[in-house]
Length: 92
Image (cartoon, rainbow, N blue to C red; front, top):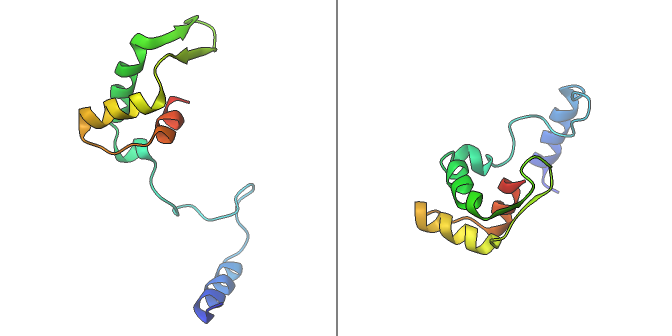
């Protein structure tokens, strides 16, 4: 292990305890897709609305279009690369 990694770890330990329930400090990691591309959420709703099935009041609803097809439709609309897994996360 590099000395710089050890020194960073020691500095983190010297900063004190983290808030309850946290294992890392805030600010790290990649920004969320929907924060980086806010225009995708309304587009996703417009794509999914016509093919949504289930009772509108009950929490159980589903989409009859595959995640791959939804990702392709978003790519065509915005020329934006989005994976089916990201589409699934956004739908949740």
